Image (cartoon, rainbow, N blue to C red; front, side, top):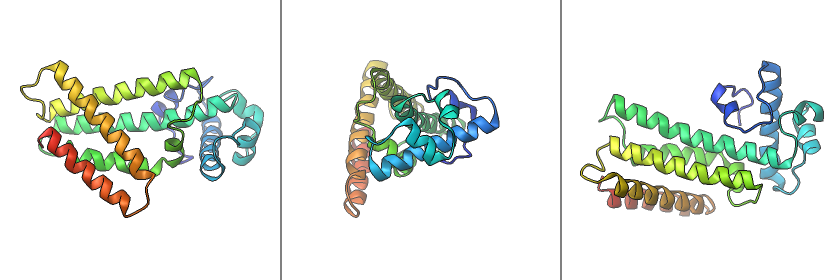
Length: 212
């Protein structure tokens, strides 16, 4: 995470105890989340604690506690930021497609953009199956539904679902997203060049199944 990332939707999406309003507070919070991500990558989830993250980020426990009071809140913020980034990526793709229907590749272009997010978000991906809390589990389910809904809209705007009723179109989008998500996680757990082969096969399979 870039510690200068300060767009309003980022903060609103994190499920914080409080939303920081001052630039200094936002900077400290961004440093703390970035530090937590680094710790997860280096040492795993089990070592995450509020004092450890605060020390790694160079901020006081008190400054962090008012926003992220415990381990569960810290991990949930990492995952929420990742989910928000993916959802906004699809929102942007939909808007570009609406502005220029011939300019957006609804499979290849969007898949490559999603792959770039997966590449960046190693720590968040590693938390994909970690039991954080009941609220975090519910948030994961909401994210999957939100992504499937966006894929449905994207495919509809691209004309891929012309002649397909909404119920079946929603099912097609859900299967496409769930399949891609599963393969992407598997691909990023694999070494190169195996990863590249899996990603190429995923794009081929999506194009074949969607007729694009």
